[in-house]
Amino acid sequence: MPRVVEIEIVEDFTHRARLDEGFLRLRRLRARNRRADGTRSREYPIDVVDRPTLDAVAVCAWSRTGRGVEVLTRRGLRPAAYFRRGKPSALAEPEYLLVEEIVAGVLEPGERGVEALRRRGADELREEAGLQVVPAALATLGGPFFMLPGIASEKIHLLEVQVAPPARAASGAPYDAPHEGDGSPLEEGAILAWRELGSAIRACESGEIEDAKTEIAFRRLAARLA
Image (cartoon, rainbow, N blue to C red; front, side, top):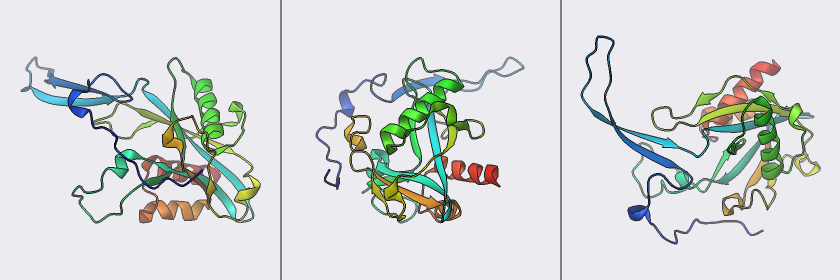
């Protein structure tokens, strides 16, 4: 599949879109604090971003190789990062297209419980990385956490699993992710790579890897394996 080089806007329909439809739902509220003594604060605005389901899984796939403990990353299209271009930012930064992170995905409606998390994690590994694992092989990697609790209600559940990397990963060079993914065009052009765990953590510290859940996963895995 040809490499993706740009995300082209066909239409910007922000002005006529509803806040309660689409992949993300925006609740725009007026609120006030009720205090223990019965008084109330002044009113203030709150914006809350929901998804149709409130939870997501992120999977830290790892392996023991001749290079040490290695972890899998996936560089994929991330529109929110892409459309930072042309806007003022606090520091100079590159123009983004692909963002490097671990495999992740949102739960489907009705998926609840640890077993559902494991099944979803196994499905995401198959779709996004072409790795076949049985759900029971996945283990929770610490407690779940919020990424942006002041804005987004989503909670991320970390899982880890030891796998055997495909033969094409033996060289250490990046390679193309499965083309089909989940069928979305956002899955096009993704790139997989295996990094030695210590160097992956250093890449997070240096800003080469800029995804927070990925750094949390790598640090938790390092602590567990130690």
